[in-house]
Image (cartoon, rainbow, N blue to C red; front, side, top):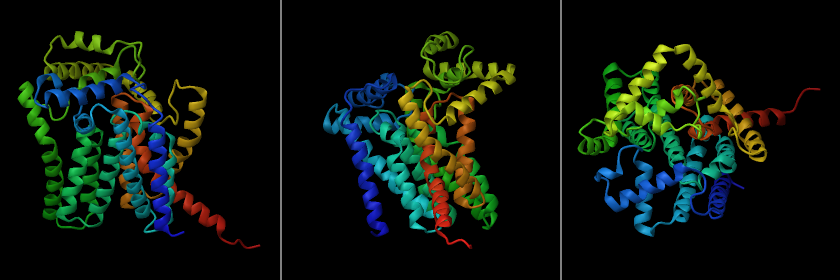
Length: 394
């Protein structure tokens, strides 16, 4: 079997697993978040994106994705799951490309990376869930691949594509934005181009990100009279992560929204968000040691291979599947930290970890990192298999 045939087989398996699991699901059974995203998609479709009732609470891209499907097929969650299965298969192809880059053109590394992604239980599960994670994982992986290509050859075209990928990812969820300045600073430090050329390319990347986000910022300003770049949920996310009775994850026993409304004391979404964010940041500044300990708890929840509170069977499946991939991926990224690909992944791990130490954590928030870590995990596995296959002296 050729490498190309192997890739086609893995992509077919990826699609089959996700479509098969998705078609076993019905309605929106998994969380209130599903119902909220579904409601946002229907609101965009029924009212239009400029209607005040569609609000600014969520980043828009996934809601627009749902609205587009509902426009064509009607309210059909099964079609959304099939579409997400296709997106997951496209992500698998990107993981293959990233694995080949980390293997310095070794297609075996790409095939193993794609295989790990194809059968990773959390990716199969979330492809059937109406939440933004599947789309976010695709856009994050695309951003990393575009970054690798930009690093290899820093043309203006590649700078634009990199910026567009990051901008779309930010409109899905803005978790990748802290990684962007870090990676651009390291690129500028490592690049041998003249300073003017470095500055010009950085400006193109940032300008492309801004051009993607700006239309939605303009829409938010038209609705609220306030500058809200993407969404007005900074305050609630900080509150969940720093709630006096919280432990760093979303606790269904705590009424965060009631506490949020009390702190905000206004119905204006943008003003309320800014006010609550300021109050919570004040709590953190007043008691930094407490919030540092809380941040360490969040770091544990972020990197926990299983989802705390799930059944023993799901915990065992997640630990036995996610755990080895995470360990090998982190080891591989560290070993390749001096290469552009490894450095990008190390910075992504650091930035995402720090971000969720400030806000709040859940295993699903780590999925964009899990995806790209399949590539260094595959690189480690291929190296070990190669060494085991070499003849040893007697």
